[in-house]
Image 1 (cartoon, rainbow, N blue to C red):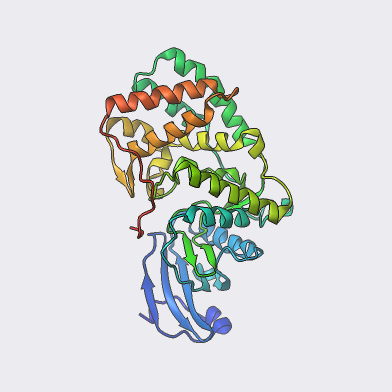
Image 2: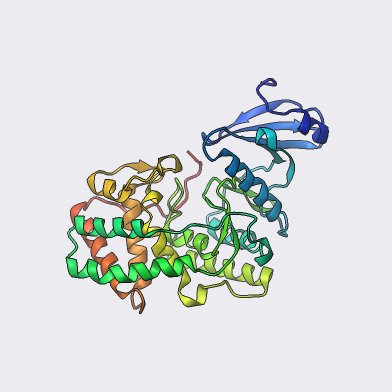
Length: 352
């Protein structure tokens, strides 16, 4: 085990000789160990060589340094790095079972994370890329496949184009985690800490506040908390953002949360794990067959997102056609696949 632990001279010069180490579960993109150091237990993470490895390492180290500004903390302390080996060492944090209303503390911690950046941080991380015209086109094709009448799809097409434009101009320079998933949040005795910042970027905070309503779109764990709990979580987010910045969340008062949720609905890649986001039209795949990822199937995820966006766009002057479209698609899916069940309301007790 000692021979495989990538703890070289750079780390030894800063942290000393490591003690016993134990391999931990991780994604295929990284190797992770719990290692004993003179100052206490720590986590050593090495980004595996491959396409995008250097970018993932740069994002993670940069975002951990930025996140360290937050008080109380929202991420582990970065103890040392070895860029030549794409290795970083952080403090070890003990995770405990999340509380039944965990989304409230999660949202508050997410707001503090998002609020750690300002305009002066522009360029330290890539700008978040939203849905593109190809995503909207694939979504409209799915509607036609489901049998939604042409007048409904045609009526929404222009609104979707305008939506993409608004999302591309959405205000904000928040530090976005990139995958703020159950499993990437550690519930400690001192509060929630986020880990695994390989996809971190800058952009509109509403992109990730939307996770609560749209069902954690990049995650294995899709949940749909009851409305009162959602409102408590969103209130906690707004409160923490204002406490940290002295301002309101950019774009929230202008319908930006609805736009963000609609943007996630268009993303067919948000129906599959990251390794399978390869340009395939996964919306078209979902019309042909269903598959399970984590707590829900692709069609369950899509049904939940359609229901959410249909409700949020009802009466929205800029998205009236999208409201009609998503309502019709939701109805068509239930008619075609009547056995589809809602996504779970509660988070499972363990990650897969």
